[in-house]
Length: 131
View 1 (cartoon, helix red, strand yellow):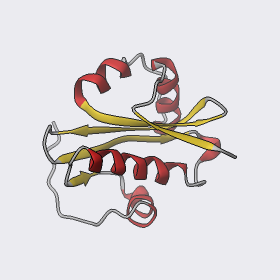
View 2 (cartoon, one colour; view 1 turned 90 degrees about the vertical axis):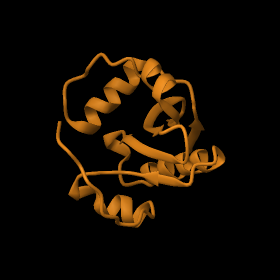
View 3 (tube, rainbow, N blue to C red; view 1 turned 135 degrees about the vertical axis):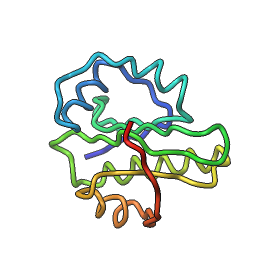
View 4 (cartoon, rainbow, N blue to C red; view 1 turned 45 degrees about the vertical axis):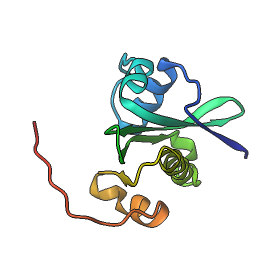
């Protein structure tokens, strides 16, 4: 299986919406990902198998040295095959090339092994306010 990763690759909103619904267990929403990532993101990574979008991650940033991993998603049939870790690795390369010094992520407890072990994040103390 050959997977091609593209920093700031082209994508269709409908395809990302379907992948997001599958990845986060909700109905398909009508989100304009194009305008969202072009306004707020340093970049994003698309993973494709035979031209089909099978993975996506958004890399938001503060305009300075901090980048943030958001919405890591991989098609259900291809999870646990290394695609998610490579999406994050490509996101880190893109953030590093943009002179970011830090790549942040937050996640649910069940994803700790993925982000710490497979992706190499280090645990930190952080704060959060539910709004």
